[in-house]
Amino acid sequence: MKVTVKAPAKINLSLDVLGRRPDGYHEISTVMQAVSLYDSVTVSRNDSGKVTVFCAYDGVPNDDTNIVAKAAYRFFDYCRLEPQGVHIEIDKQIPTQAGLAGGSGDGAAAILALNLLFDARLTPADMNAIGERVGADVPFCIEGGTKLCTGTGTSLKKLPRFRCESIVICKPDAVSVSTAEAYQKVDALPKHPCYTDEMIKALYSRDLFMITSTIFNDFELALQIPQVSEIKKIMLECKAKGAGMSGSGSAVFGVFDSRRKAEKCCEKLRQSFPQTFLCKPVNTGCEVVSN
Image 1 (spheres, helix red, strand yellow):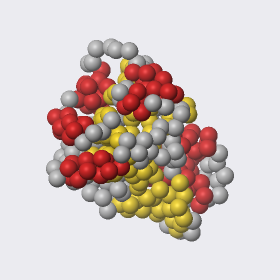
Image 2: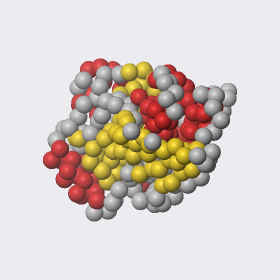
Image 3: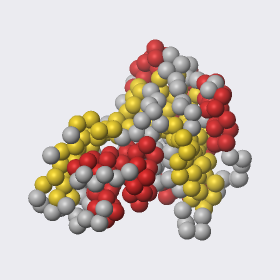
C-alpha cells in the first residue's frame, strides 16, 4: 500500500522577528499563506525495517538527514512504534532554500501519509505535535490556509482568508540563504513596531490595497539581496499590487489582481529567472491525492 500527499508552498505576507529567547530560538510573529505550488510525497510500506528516501532534485539528500526521514522517526516515536520499513519519494517542484517551506511541507506530507498507512488515527492536534518536533513551519504546512504564526512559528491562529487573482513567485538562481546567517543579520536590526499587527488588521478589512501595502519582512530588510530588489522592481513594473521576500529568502512573491498581468510578469521574469511560478492562494494544507 502507498499514499501520495501534495504539499503546498507558503509565503509570508508579513514576518517580524521579535527577538532571541532564553532557549536560543527566536520569537516571531508572521502571517503565512499557502499557495498552489506543490511538492508531491509518496510513502509506501515494506519489510526492510528501514526508512529510505529518494528525491531526484539536485541538492536534496537521500538519507536520514532529509526532513521526511526525521518526520517518519518522530511519527514512530510519538505512536510508540518501533521504526518500520517505509520508502518515501519526493517529487519536488518547490525550490529549495527559498523561504517557501518546501522541506517543511514535505515533512508535513510524510506525517499525513504515515497516519493513513499505519491507521494511527491521529487527530490534527497530534499531527501538529509531531510537526513541532520536526520543524517550525511543519504545523502550518499541515493546516495551510491563512494563519497567524507566533512563538517559534508553531502556534497557529486562523485569520480571514486571503484572496487575490494570482501570485507570482520567483527565486533567483544561485542565491540561497542560510537561516542561521539570516537570523544573525536580523538580530542587528534596530527595533521597530510589529508590522504583523497591521497585516492582521488589513486581512480583516479584506481590502487588497491595504493588505499589499502592509507586506513586510525583517529578513528582506536585514539581508538586502540585490536580486530580490531587482525582482520586486520588475513585479511592480508589471502592475503587481505589492511584492516582498518570503521567509528568510531568497524567493520573492508578487500579488496581482489580474491573471493576465501575472502571466505577463512571469514571461518577463523567466527571461532572467527560470524559477518563476504562477499560482494563487489556497485555503488548505497538505492533502491526500491517492491511497
